[in-house]
Length: 175
Length: 136
Image 1: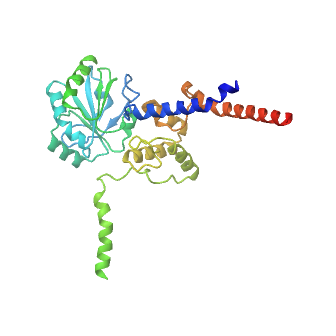
Image 2: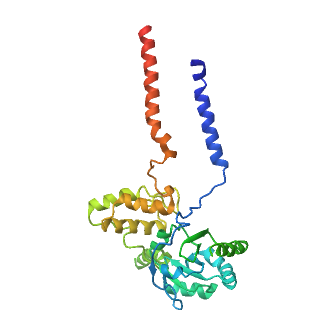
C-alpha cells in the first residue's frame, strides 16, 4: 500500500501535465452557439432601422417559406465584407431580413448605400435585447428560419464565398 | 493662460469625438436607486460572463454588449424578476458557459465532491500520524 502511495504525487503531476497539454494543443474554439437552434424564434417586434425598408416582427419570419435572418451593424467591418455574399444569396432566391444591432438610422442608411441592400425588412435593436433573446453573441451572424418560424441553423461570423452553397442547402433543408 | 485653457479643453474634446453615435443603454453604468436591488443586480452581474471579452464578467467588461447586458439585468431586477430566473434565461440561450456559478450538473459532481474527499484524505493522514506518535 505504502509502496503504491509513494507514486501518487507523480501520477497526479503527470495527470495535470496531460490535462494542461491537451488544453494547450486543442484548437481554440471560442464560438458560442445559440441554444435556441431547433426551437421557435423568440417573439419580438422591432422598429425600422433604415429609411427605405419596413420594420420587423418575429411573426413576419414564419411565412411558410424558409428565410434568412442576418444580424449586422453599420459599425461592424466583417458585416461589410459579407455584403456581396448576402447579395449572391438574394439573387439565388433567398429571402433575407435583418436586425441592426446598437445602431442608428442615418448610420444604417449610409452603410446600405455603401455596401448594397439585400434585405427585405430591417429591425433596429438599439439595446441588443433581441440579440440576447436569440442567443446571438456578436455580429455578423445569420440564422436560417424555417417556414414555421423555428431556428434551423445559426451561422456565426461573416459568410464567405464558399459558405454560400452551404447556406442555400440549409435553406432547402429547412423547407 | 488662454493657451493652457485651450489645450486643456482640447484634451476633453478628443474622447467625445471617438464615441459611437449611440449613447450607452440607460442602466449600463448607472446604479439602481434602491441599494438592495443594486446589490442583487451587482451580485448577478459579477457571475455572468461577457460574450465579447470571454474572460471577464459583464460587471468588469467595457464591451458595449456587456453594457447592454448590465442595463437589461438592472431593468429586469427593477421590474421584480429574481436574479436566478435571469441567469436561467441566459443559460437557456448561451449555455452553462455564460454563468460563472457552478451548477449541479453531473459533470461537476467531482468538483462538489473534491472538498469532502480532500478533507477525508487529510483526516486519514492525520490519524496515521497520531497513531504512529502514540506508538513511539
